[in-house]
Length: 142
Image (cartoon, rainbow, N blue to C red; front, side, top):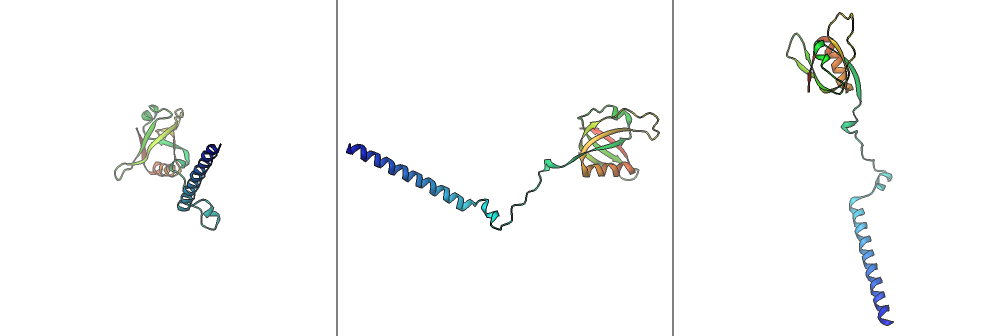
């Protein structure tokens, strides 16, 4: 019986030592790494920046000068939109824009071209509107 008690006592002491060592490691990790409790003690919380994927997409109707090119497009296609002004070289206004819709051709519209609806970030939509007002727009499939 005495032997069993001795073994039991040693086992309990070993478990206490292991538990104490584990608690010491956890305490050291918390002391080095800090906790979120620091933010509640007056420190400013970390600034959260939106991820690039969180950019809001909008639908931008764009009139493309070549109607035949627009007829080749299907929803889901990716295109680059190029603005060709009378002065200066052509410039890419939107890169990798997703085609959202290709409306049916308008009958009786005299200004030529064809309409396509692109899904683009809001800033790119503004650039497309501005470019469409002063230049002829073309698309290239990506």
